[in-house]
Image (cartoon, rainbow, N blue to C red; front, side):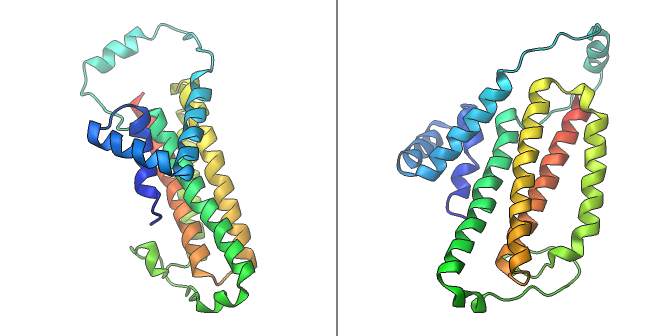
Amino acid sequence: MSRHEPWVDQLSDFLDDELPDDERAAVESHLALCAECTATLAALRRVVAGASSLASRAPERDLWPGIALRMTGPARRVSFTLPQLAAASLLLATLSGGAVALFLSARDQNPGANAAVPAVDIVQPVESSLDGLALAVSVADAQYDAAVADLERALEGGRGRLDEITVSVVEQNLSIIDRAIAEARSALAADPSNGYLSGHLLEARRRKLDLLRRAAALTEAN
């Protein structure tokens, strides 16, 4: 895990002003010394500000009957906010794309270093941490593509139940994640047996599935 990840994970709550005073002070102290996390926070603010600046759209019909009906049933809670949704993809762009670029730069400066990186065997997917480097990304392609397709269909089917701000944030985040996946694939094409790069691609895919699940949950909660 990157040393920045625990701090980046707190940035959405920092923006929402939901951190306890001591944790907020710790984040502020870290930001004063860390250029990378400061840049991530600035990017997150731009995403949220851009989404918030979209013009509101008046409903095309009276929504109160549907609202009143939902008020009579059990409440459903969405456990994340727009900044939190945006933070997931910004974290990926920082940790995945950036790490791949740093790795390739270091590899070019020290070509012999590749010999120390173990190859990834082709095995069936199992529950494991990325540190094990025991998962072959290619094996999971069919299952991954099918899961993404199902979630994308669910999201598209419920798109009309989301407001423009939410749709904009989701689309921007998916675009960021897709770029990170493309960068990881490109790097692996040049070095297909590299376990380090395979781990980053696997993590990028996991984060895309997580974001799609969260977005699909929003359509069900609205």
